[in-house]
Image (cartoon, rainbow, N blue to C red; front, side, top):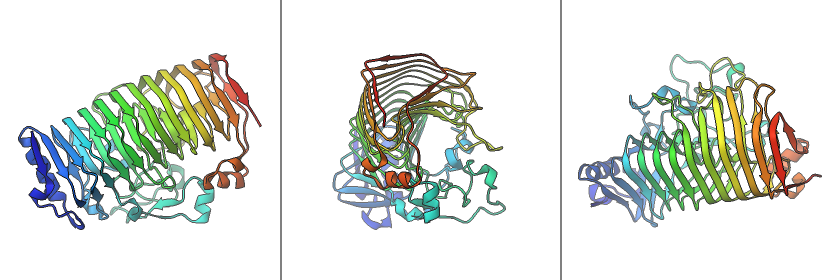
Length: 444
């Protein structure tokens, strides 16, 4: 097994000179000789997009930083037939670390991946913050591609090229830091990811045997779409002993098959022993018109100063054009377990299951909540549809307490209070076989 120090391939590590070619040369050489470790140590290695290859462990020592470039031209769009790039979320085909169809790859080490994300955003106006109280920044506007035009107001959720009406709008910045597509045997261990460019930290799509262990994700909580780990159409995934703080969802389980040539289920996902802070959802399962998500377990979690704790909100798209990551399947979510979870000082729902009108939902069923202790501004909400009831929901040994916004020590709770957002009692509607055992609700 090779040990390839990127400095032996010409990397400087001064944080100023671009080291992309040297890092890529080390990866290519390592893989070509059967695999091994590509080592970053003793410096800040400025880089654009790099592509992992079979058998390569990218190891970042504690005295090293893989530093993302602030020049969008250093992150070229992915061009491939391996997956349908036209269905990339937010129509953005750019990322920092890319792996396609790889086996036995890893990102490890006590060092950091710093994406210099603040170079890609600017502060929101007070009017914008009043409209989206959980955000403080918007992506910097970039020139529209030649021949294109801003989107009209009726399609602000589509997420195509920049327009001023949606603070989450796509920019030319890399929308994913690490993108693993169709890979097998993936390990992310110990490494810290920080300062993301208002995009997802990890997008794991159509992968098997993926393990996140002791990983840390510290994204700005007030930047748009600063998600943690997106697990999409994958099998056999574990996320354990991780600390994640981000502006959007910490861990997402989805079955969005749009980018794939063949639809795939998302199943056998285990998330345990983690600490989460999110200004959207700490845990989300499902989105718009996803496929099948099943047999997933979430346990031993601390969720603090977040918005929604545990979420299965299936929205619909009111616009005429599809959203950039809107699926084309009937959604089935089943056999999902949540246990031993503390949810503290949340300014929205501790638990939310909601099937919106026109969402292509076949069923949400067999959902288990055990030993959940929550203090939140809102109470649990489980709302099905007249034509699609939520089925078989069990609460055992759970305790939900309602807090006024004034007792939640975040600026975002203060903004919610100024907007006079009402506090709601628990809501259960269009649910079949809803069972409570030793479960309590303390409502203000």
